[in-house]
Amino acid sequence: MFAMKNALLNQQFFNNYFCKKSSMPQGQTPTTPSTIIETACRTVELEAYGLAQLAKALADGLGRDFEKAIALIEKAQGRVIISGMGKSGHIGRKIASTLASTGTPAMFLHAGEANHGDLGMITEDDVIVALSWSG
Image (cartoon, rainbow, N blue to C red; front, side):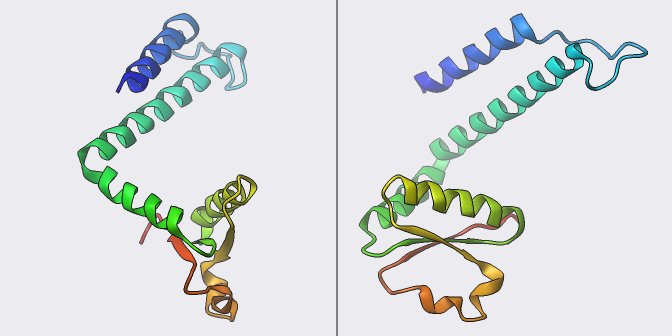
């Protein structure tokens, strides 16, 4: 909770000193320096809001499932198989790469290719993390 309050205070500091809310004057373009800063501020605000919502969800019950998932990954005797399609697949590749580079055996399995023979790469010792935005 301390970290979340600290992050929100840092966001307020950033917004107060760097983010001036104003409408775009005539003749300004989205690449005008002041507009770039405003866009960056909106992005920081949206990301901070997303992180705050994630923290709330973890505290409101999602945390139990998250702990179970982490425990499964920690106990895995095989690899962590990350799977997804589209944007979820792109994110999955990054997750698998990060896990592998930090010492957790991991690989990415494209959900569309799995049915064409790639399922044979999965063993009973592996843990599968399937990512999907739409189900």
